[in-house]
Amino acid sequence: MSTVPPAPIPAHTVVVARAQAERLSAQRFHLVLLDTERAGTVYPLATEDLRVGKSTDNDVVIDHPTVSRNHLVVRRQGDRFLVQDLGSTNGTFLDGAQVREAYLRPGALLEVGDVRLRFSPQMAPVQVEPTVEDRLGDLVGRSVPMRQIFALLQRIAPTDSTVLLVGETGSGKGAGAKAIHKLSPRATGPLVVFDCASVSDSLIESELFGHEKGAFTGAVGQRIGCLERAHGGTLFLDEIDDLALDLQPKLLRAIEDREFRRLGSSTPISFDARIVVASKKDLWSETQAGRFREDLYFRLSVFTVSLPPLRDRKEDIPLLVGAFAGDGLWPRLPEKIQEQFMGHTWPGNVRELRNALERARHMVDIPGLTGDNLLREFTRDVPSPAGDFLPVEFTGPFKVCKDELVRAFEREYLTRLLGRARGNIARAAREAELDRKHLYSLLHKYGLVQSESD
Image (cartoon, rainbow, N blue to C red; front, side, top):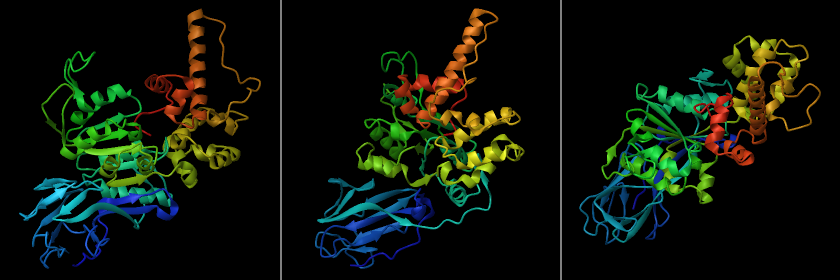
């Protein structure tokens, strides 16, 4: 029996992790032998074809009476692995079912005669040289972590592999998805964005796959879903960690088979779209806790890019200020304000910074300006000082004055609500006892959130 020598880590499996010591790592797949005296031997899938059999000219040689001379081959097809039986005597079984050919999923059990092999991923650290540029699309940063991410996105965008973007709310996941799309061969196709957290669980399946007229109560006409609309382009599924467990296998099947069915229809529809997803949570931890399917996680994390929070890259703040508000604003801010910007923890990340700058453009020349005026939405509720009341106008039509006061109240309430929730929409909706979709509409109304720039 022989083993396959280690090979260079393929570019399409690079993962950027948040931890400083493991900022860059790679996902490599391999077969692990579970039986015979060589149990525990690892065979990396480092070549396009990996042949398994008793003959010594195979890549994986298993000297066992139930294994044929040339038993099977595992072929890499993009970011998937296809196992094909080579006419073996005792057959090839995948998770207990005999197959002539089938795609392998992480954790799958492969039976070669009476010998078992496990198809498993393994993480390994790698190095990615940072770019010299400090921008990539709408992403901005001169810090090393950001320039490493720029280099990685430039490297993986031309591929068609799925990408998982991980980061806190407001850290730039939406901008990352747009950069991947614009740098890909699919740039001329559509970029379809769907937020899994903004639609009720009962409607998500219809939003993803579409439905036929009469498929359910209220389906008064045919609806084209996100997968179908993204054909020829990129589908960005935001807040994938909020996708219900019962829908996850349906999404996995659609991605694996590259086809789906609208609700109420038995006709399969093929689709060709690059899948990019985003999560505010560590999806691997979610799988370990049973809140996310492991097979879907591995299918989505061919590439994983973790965007660092703004508090971990404060050297980027002056550059971000210039990108959002013009290069002339940062030097005009009083030194005390600059210090407060650099010392703030930015729980809302880049989105919070952008909102603060929107106020700064109008307030920078006001005498007595303080950092609290610019960063107020993420301060804790305290008794309002004199003069910090909602504006009330007592002259003019009653309805107009009332509407202005209500708008001022709604904006102030939502701003403070977001601050207490640290930008977490689901948490804010629970505190306010509002439907999440209604809360989104209110936030959009007052410009406090943008659906494509998480």
